[in-house]
Each structure stands twice: as structure tokens, then as C-alpha cells.
Image (cartoon, rainbow, N blue to C red; front, side, top):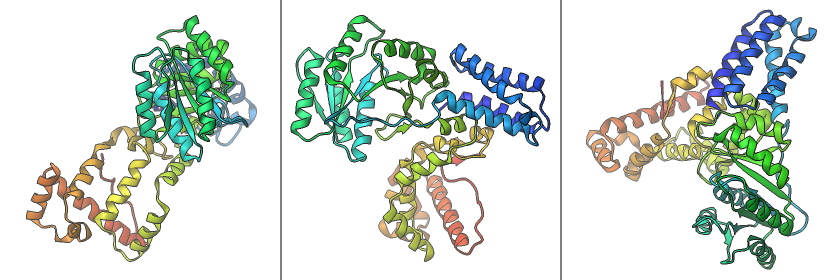
Amino acid sequence: MFQELNEKLATVVRKLRGHGKLNEKNIADTLREVRRILLEADVNYKVAKQFIAEVQKRAVGSEVLKSITPGQQVVKIISDELTRLMGEREAPLQFSSSTPAVIMLVGLQGSGKTTLAGKLGYLLKRRGRQPLLVAADVHRPAAVQQLQIVGRDAGVGTFAETVDNPATICRHAVKNARENMLDTLIVDTAGRLHIDDEMMRELENIKETLNPSEILFVADGMTGQDAVTTAVSFAERIDFHGVVLTKMDGDARGGAALSIRAVTGKPIKFLSIGEKLDQLEAFHPDRMASRILGMGDVVSLVERAQEAVDIEQAAKLEQKLRRQEFTLIDFMEQLQQIKKMGPLQDLLSMVPGLPNKTLKNIQVDDRAFIKIEAIINSMTLEERRRPQIINGSRRKRIARGSGSVVQDVNRLLNQYEMMRKMIKSMSRGTGRRQGLPFGLKN
């Protein structure tokens, strides 16, 4: 996410921190470079210009130039202004007091509304709400069937009718939700390949019918300035409440995220960071500014860990570690919990102090987890409990059974042994870093 923008701005940040003294000229040179980077990332020209002007106004003040660490001060100013540009603070979903609360999704065709409906349903269900997906797209072939599949995968019901009027479908959905004690409607509306009056009138009718507590504009994060231009048109006609940027796990340059809040005045509420149902992330401007500048995001990393870690399993593991009884069964359980936290490259980007150059040199292969699971699943229960009994013939059998080669089995056992020794030494208070985990290679 924002890899190119992150790389370039992180380089500028490192140079700034290295300056013993700053003056107006080298600050101006630095900001000229930042402006170029922002424009290359497809940030709106006026937004980039205003951003640089605000940073420069604060950076040339006497309290910065005469401070002991002027470079650090300017980096702090850039971080603050990036945060302000993207909205300053998180904008959570708002729910009306009347039941059901309605979340209406709008945007162009292909922006990811239907998939987002499933992700929101999955998220809200985990938070204790009772959502219902509403198929209000009567134009796109198989739109209803796609939403039903997404809803089934998310464990959320879908309301659909074979009528041509989306407003009528929505009215009936409200009645259905009340009858079934459901408290939230997530309405998947129709989009077009481009903005037209017919689509806007249809959305206006749905809005008037439902009076939604949230209207979310869904924008493809990879389209850059096109997403911002489209957002302005939707804001003028529909007056949505917030933005969701999708496909942020792709080659998104970051221009939409940095521009859309400033241009529309509407907050970014979520980022969709992958295809899986749980890959929807609340947008925190301060955390995102920190990640863009290469300073990590510990809070988000901890939150992901808290969601992924089974407390009961963790307590059992702690007891085993105290007794130094770490087996391959425990090893695989830990890997499965790491998998729940998301792609490894994304997790590494949240680690503060890890240079971008290091990240580029580390090859992250998430498929390594699949291979590890296949190898361990090909072992007998006794072999998983007592890996030391795995001799040459057993290794050949395990390799055949898992579709791998003996070298893969050896590598896994070596990694396990390294981790076991590290845990043993840590329990004695002599733990030290002993290389990278399986799946990461220098």
C-alpha cells in the first residue's frame, strides 16, 4: 500500500533528519522534492500546492530553524500536515436511532461496491450487529447472484426481489428487516461506467426512500485523480457522508487517499486492503501519515494481533513455553494466527524503524505458510509431538505426502529447531535475534 510514495518520502525524511542545520534554502529545496513526489503520486495539483505552502509556513519559523534538531522538527510538521490533509482523526460509522439503520453504497461500476457490502456485513456482524444486504442493483447482469454469494460467505442474509424499481426493493427490505429483528441494512446500488443523470436520479430516489444514516462513496484507489473527480460529482448530487477506498493492496500511488478528503471535504472511513472478507481496515489519518513517511504503525499492528490471537490458546502456549514443551503442533498454530493478521509485507511495513531498503531486500512469500501446513499435515501425530524421531526415511515420506522435496522438510525442521532453541534461551533470559522467520529471505 502506497509503496512508491512511501519509498520516495521516506528517503526525503532520512535526508532531513541527517541535517545538522537547516535554512530557508534547503527547506525550500526539500519541499520542492516533496511536491514533485506528491504530483507523481497523482495528488491533486491544488492540494499539493496548498500542502507545501502550509509546511513551508510552519517550517521556516524561528522555533524550527534555531532548534537543536531542526530536521526532526520539519519531519514532524510534514507528518502533522499529512494527517490534517487526510482528516486528522478517524471517522467511524454513524447509526441512526431508528431501526434498521441504513448504509447506502454508491459509486461507479467496478469500484468494488458488492464486495465491500459483504466486508461491511462481516465486520458489523463481528461487532454484534445484525446486518442484511440489499440487492438494489437491477441493471448489471448477475449482480444479485454475486451479492448473494458474498453474503453467504460473510454469513449475512441477502434481500432481493425480481422487480425493476430499486426504491421499491429498498422499502420492502426495511419491512423485512423489522419483521426479522435485523438492525442494519447495507444497500448495494447500481453503478455505471461513467456518471449519468439516470443513475443519479435512481440514487436520489433510494436516498429519499431510505433516509440512510451513512452514504459511502466507494472509489477504486488505483484510479487516482479520476476517483477524486468522480467523488466531486457524487458529492454534488448525492452529498455522501464518507469515502471507502478499495483495491489498496494493488499498485495504488496514493493520490486518491491524499486528495479526496481535501477536495470533497468528506472523510475517508475505510480502506479495502485485499480480497478476503476480513481485509477491511478503518482509516486513521495519523497512522496512515506515519506509514507513508516510513515510520511504521505500531497501534494498527497491535490491533491486528489482538484480533488474530486466541487468548485461551496463548495462555496454553505460555504454560508450554515455561515447561519448554514447544512442538510442531504449537508451531503451526502460531503460523495460523500470523496468517489471520494479513499479508506479511503489510505487517512488516507497520514495524517502526525498519528501513524501506530492508523491506525491498526481504522477499516475502505468503505461500510459504501453505507449504509449511502441507508438510506438518503429512506427519503423524507422534512426529508432530516429537520431531526428533523424524529420520531420513520419514522425511522422504513426508516430502512425498506434502508434494514437496526433502530439502523443504529439512528447512522446516531447522526453522522449528531454531525457534525452539530461541524460546529455550529466552526462558533463561539469554534470548537474542537469530535470523528471519520462515518465508522471509535476505
